[in-house]
View: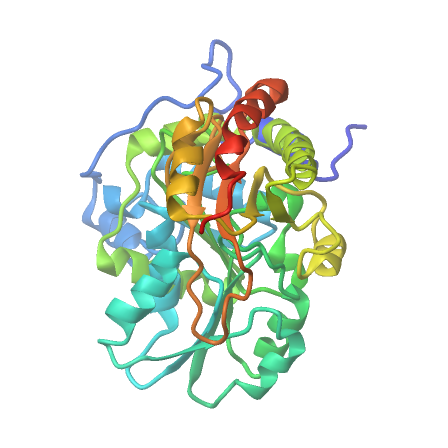
Length: 394
C-alpha cells in the first residue's frame, strides 16, 4: 500500500500539475484571461456569491485554475488552511496588515522588520490614524505587556531583515493569541522547507515569492498563508484593493517550486560555509547568521528551524564608507541588488533602522546572498577585494 503520509519532496513534484491523463504536459500551461463566462444566470450568481473561495471561477482577478493549484500547493507546504496570492512580497505584507488595521487601532511591529514594512507603516498606516509601536524583537513573552485592547495585530520577522536576530516565535504568537490579537510573520528567509510558523502558533504568514520560492530572480509575486479564521477576510481585502497576480508569474512560481527543497539544502550548506569563511577573515568583526552561537536568538533558531538560508550579514571592523564602496565595487561574482534568494550571489551594504532601541554594532554591516556559484570562486573574489578594508579610516 502506498505511503499516504505527507512528504514535502513529493508534494513539490506532484502537486499543482495537470490532471493525470495520457499525453499530458509535465507542467501546467501559461493561463491568461480576464472574463469568465457562464451558460446560465444561476451559475453566474452562484460563482459571484462564492468568489472569495479559492477554487471558484468567477472573474480573472479572483483567480483561475493555475492560481488555485499554486495556492493549494503553498497551503500544503505551509500547513496553512488557505493561501492568497499577491502581486509582490510588499503587497502580501500590506494586504495582511490592512486586513486588521483600523483608524485608532494600535499595531505592534518588530523593530527589525523589512524596510518596506516600516515604510508602509510610516507613510500609509499613520495617515490612516493607526498608532504604530515598534518593539524589541527579542522580547518574547514580554510582548504581552505591550498588548492593548486596541491592538489590531502583531507584525514580526524571523529572522530580522539585515540583522538576523531570531525572535521567540511561539512565545510571541502565544501571547498575541491569548489577547485575541492576530500574529503576522514574514517568513521569506526560511521558506516552509526550514520553518512552518503556523505549526508554532502564528496566524498569518507573509512571504515574497520573488525570493527563494520562485528562485530564479524572474518572478514578482507574494503570498499570504493563514489559518481558516482569517483566510476569507484576507482574501476580501486583497480583492477589494484590486491586487492581482499575473499568469506568467504563476507559471514561473510553479516551475521554481519544483526544485525548492534541493535549492534550500544547497543554500543552507553553502551559506554556513561562506559565513564561517568570513568569520576567519581579519577584516571581519562578527558574522550575523542564525546558525552561529553568538547570533541573538540562536537557541530559538535551533528549536524552531531545521536549516538556514544563504542570506546573512557581515559586520566589518570600522572603516570609511569609501573603503566599503571600493570593496563592494571590486567584487566580480557578487551582483549589487536589493533582492535575494535567486541563483546568483549578491552583496549590499545595510544601515539598520531602529525605533524601539539602538543598533549598537560598531563597524560597517554588509549583507551577502550566497547563490549557486562555486564556493572557491566566491572566496577567491572576496580574497582579492578584502584588502581594500585593511586600512582603518583616520
